[in-house]
Image 1 (cartoon, helix red, strand yellow):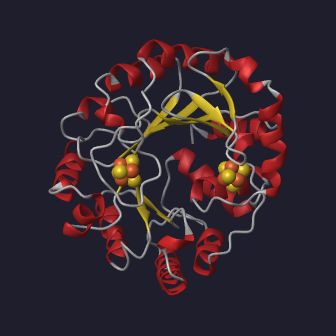
Image 2 (cartoon, protein in one colour):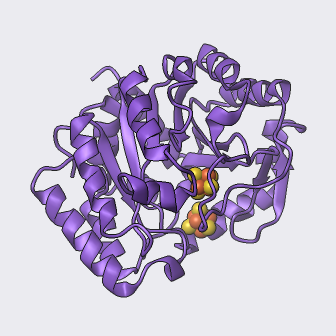
Length: 319
Ligand code: SF4
Ligand code: SF4
């Protein structure tokens, strides 16, 4: 349990409302063409120097964990250098990938504390959803090569992916990975019937001992499509986009650009404080990250135990 002190420190920072985690959309480019994508964009990505300068400041302010995502982070030509530098600064570092380039960029996985592969369905169905032929087979080859010890699978349940999406659980078992099932961002993407049937089946699998990482509370919320929680995501994390902008996710207003401005000054701006206060009345997001981290920050015991087990890398029992 060598990560236990880290977890306690993280929890105490969250209670003090001092974020320690960076959710970092490191590129807006992606080689996939999912019809439902909200993240791919044509804004120019930040350069290496601005990114590393931001991480140096973040480390000095007490941040110590990050997840790089996109777009497709492995598309960046300098992704290996970025990950190496971030690790040198002492960050726990994770990366979320669509898996297409896992074999080519296998060296990146040497430096990761965790790797999350997005797989919404097995086989041809995934190729269809992502609009790219041969993707699923490349993921399978790539997972076989990668060298990160902690793999997680992320599966979005929607009318596009159900019922095939439930079969990704077999992959999770095969690779000793935790799997997170996600309610899609947007109720238009899932019918009430699909949500009820899919998440009921997932809950049953969890109760049977399958390595489902979502809390039971998340799964029952997803069954009904009603996510009533008080968002505390901003007590734990900041979200930076590929051009370096930190935004108020409720109003859409820009708080600052962390690639170009001093991070401490950006975090002291009134708009950021407004966001932290407003967010407590918001429960717009349906992803497990916002939901579970908010419940952890509110000291809900099942969420704390889940986070602790994920921090500690033990997946034998997930609540
Ligand atoms: S893989 Fe992700 S970032 Fe890429 S198009 Fe699909 S949803 Fe968007
Ligand atoms: S639930 Fe609301 S405040 Fe929290 S991350 Fe989502 S939009 Fe922002």
